[in-house]
Length: 435
Ligand SMILES: O=C(O)[C@H]1O[C@H](OP(=O)(O)OP(=O)(O)OC[C@H]2O[C@@H](n3ccc(=O)[nH]c3=O)[C@H](O)[C@@H]2O)[C@H](O)[C@@H](O)[C@@H]1O
Image 1 (cartoon, rainbow, N blue to C red):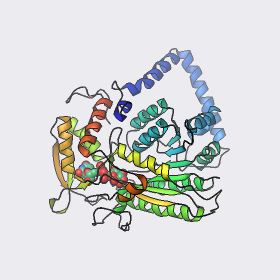
Image 2: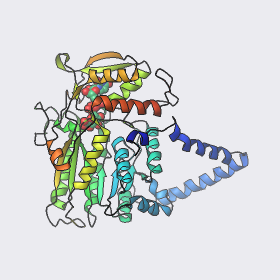
Image 3: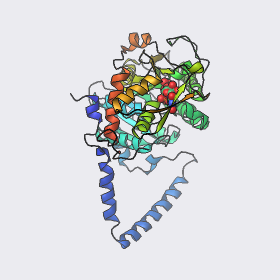
Image 4: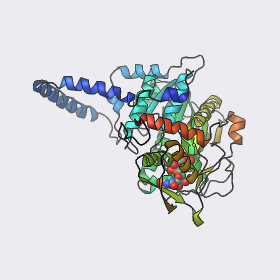
């Protein structure tokens, strides 16, 4: 059996971009002559005009639905992707499927024979080409990812009409703690409005799917009692991001209470690994260290080191899959509750916090390059000084048992990073642009 990274690393740097090259060759042939170009231009104008008149038949919506352009094969593609290949396999809608956690969870489910349909809006919060590369990989594993937004009511309605999903794995969100200062409305749009739109669609189904979704360790906010337990108060968020995740827990509780939706909320603790998020510290530090650029290491009050309960993606995937396996059924039907449904919340952490300077020194060792460190006091922009998960509940209920420490997890991340960005040797220029 190939290991996760053998499956996920392109054997040749840039291999995932061969599709673009093929497409470019095709485009070059098509536009070889001026007359062909003129015909194409006429065709595109006609297409745009018919699209605009087609759009006017629909109620106005601020969300464009790429599925509207899809041909009659769209339903067939969605159904094929959603159909399990094993007896009593699940049929799962994964939102945020081209995201970091979404990609890994989708692959894990597909590999064990579940049906998976992905949904992702491919926004540009971070380099969308990384999301497209993940989509190509998913496509190669026969996971169809729809370009679409969780706020798109029409798209969700059509999707739920097309497939009777047994589960929804809701991972689409505006992530990142500190970005909320810059773009607060993006958190409201994805983590609040988008969540409600999705839950509305789920509650109207008959039968309703069970919902498993990503909350965050950030809900513990300014708590000082360690380790953090699910029963601890979470009423002192330190960022708007944390506040929207906390609100998500309350919103999902309401849908559980009123409509009988089965809900499982997962509080992820600083997830890292191959195919990760470029906005996160371990990823941006790697990029800057390799490029000889300085990195900023924040320090808490009185110069204390910040620490995180960094959790490896493979452990998180196991927790997600176990949550889907154990999620009890929703009890509502078409919007009416017929009995109490399960409402669960679990910490998915690693239980061993590591300081940010230690993270940097592990990266330095793996990259064989010394970091240029600039130390700064932690700005008051939503950060918390430390996180530390108590995972007893997840261990008991899900059989969750993280097995990868930061040292081995970062080694695997660095291996992926060097391969993906085309570094042949340490210190080389990358073969692919790092944005
Ligand atoms: O656990 C979680 O719930 C959250 O984990 C991460 O948030 P965070 O832990 O802040 O992760 P990073 O942004 O990678 O920061 C890790 C540590 O590095 C520090 N850091 C970050 C950036 C930087 O330039 N310098 C620096 O020292 C931060 O202060 C923090 O202590 C994710 O970004 C959130 O989306 C997620 O919900």
